[in-house]
Length: 201
Image (cartoon, rainbow, N blue to C red; front, top):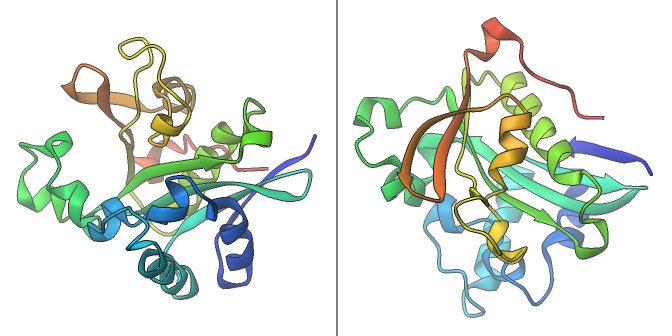
């Protein structure tokens, strides 16, 4: 089994589509819920897809994961100030405006792993790749907003699109706040100094 993760460049758009397209939530949202505050439903699906395609083709970051060469996973990562709905979310309530505007803080907002590729370590590899992309683009910190399965047992795979807390902890993220019992905010900080980044394979 070979796992690879690559930045979602314009020439990989078809691979992004192969991961996200379908009848479920990814094929309606196209990672626009946090980024543009878009509606994630069938009515808006085509517009959301067009928005993500434009973002990918113009360098808006994200990474694509491959399992034995087949596009099988996606992780959205971008500077936090661009996530209009996220910056107004209760998850970040109390964060000073000047901190919310810091372009050095990048947010990991969404994971998608195709059903045949689940439980094979792809989520871990996607997070590694997202962090590597953020650091390579000048990020000074990377944030995540995962689900703590200890506080929310029995969570479905579809509801885990934020990622499980355990994956972030293993990657070196530390909890900085817990706005709700099951949704901590975690951060990997001082990236240019600590070097705590594992390269994606």
